[in-house]
Image 1 (cartoon, rainbow, N blue to C red):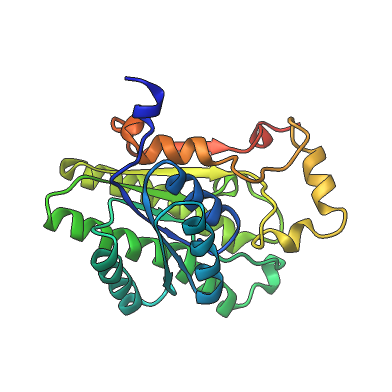
Image 2: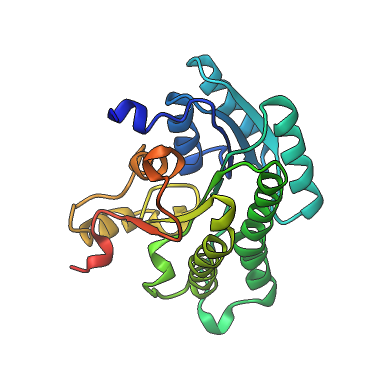
Length: 256
């Protein structure tokens, strides 16, 4: 099979959370550029609509969805709207997330709860709803969880975030095992350091240069560095992959 056919996602309907900007938007753009219909979900509806419009202006089909993944009722409504306007979701990218920067002794309970509610509970509920509908319709599908290299590499002042991403890694394997019989694939992408709104607190000022200097490739992730992994897992190219983690970090996790 030719590469253009192998990685083609025409006919797929993808729902991407946290897609108003950053890597979420980049992944949605990549899927749309390769034939998928995409729903861009974000808490900031204005930002989601601007991003969806940019995809439509380039010839893609995109829908903006207002969604807080920590709200179960909002999740069900979001899926129903996507089904009504684009068709059943066949690719879910669990990308929505929040970060923090707190010394462990000062980590407030409300911060811990918020990080886990969005990063873990939100991802679980999004995956559950996707799987329920796929199983109901006897459809195959792909669920892609966006984790982090911090799921395995501890750094100071992000204990809650690191724990949440470690939970996503175990969740990926557990759901992959349980849903494989339904032909639902569940995989994980572990990005390294990318310049996004989420990493702004860490990369302000000289932080970006320091982090880039610690990377074997000498730079941070950016733009569309996740496109290859996303297309692999969303397309026929990844049809025999489930429970897998793909690290995209420029070698950062290898150490200096």
